Length: 283
Picture 1: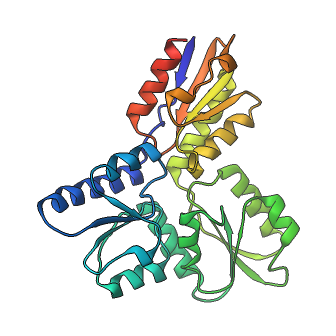
Picture 2 (picture 1 turned 135 degrees about the horizontal axis):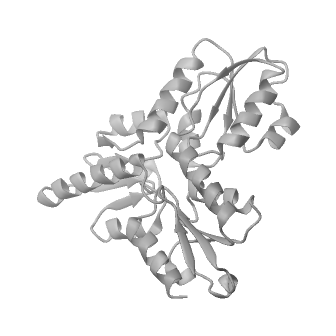
């Protein structure tokens, strides 16, 4: 079997920075006292999270779980600004591991909506990054998941001016189609908030899918950018397996395939990608 492995597979810059901050905080915490807490999973990869929780890092699901004196690491996806303010008022020590691209998007939304206009945000409404981005809007905001959904709802049909932004891991082609459609009806301000690393991963996934008979996408099932890589591959008309570990690989589904593509989400460790490639090579 010929395996085509994506060069872009694995940790992105934002994930690498976030985990480096967590490693540094963990080293200091082991020498001192107090709790080291992630407010929500720092990244969307269960194997990475399990490794840190076994080292004593606490994953809190809610700000209500934070105590005065805790060291709290803000996840790579960012958090709503009112939540960050409440943590500071509580007396917690804040370590901000928000991805720089997400932070740029937050600040761009804040700045663009200060003078009026409504925000159209292309993204997953329940995703933690999106909840954080929405908190930086200074006026009405509508979150939608596709151009079709936007056309059906048209929440600001009587607005003169709208601001368009996107979750940093959204698909570029869909965003461009949304931009063109909105420009025909509104005075439009476009914030280019989709991460370049996301664009490159999706382009490479599309290119590999054009050469392969099946595609393997490795990463957390709750990872939005990984799910979208799988969607990009499926759009090319080939079978796709989205797996977290080599154990989930279906050999039967690959029977007869001479060439298989392999890529991974931005939160997937190289060690897991390597293990999947080794499992494929043994088929």
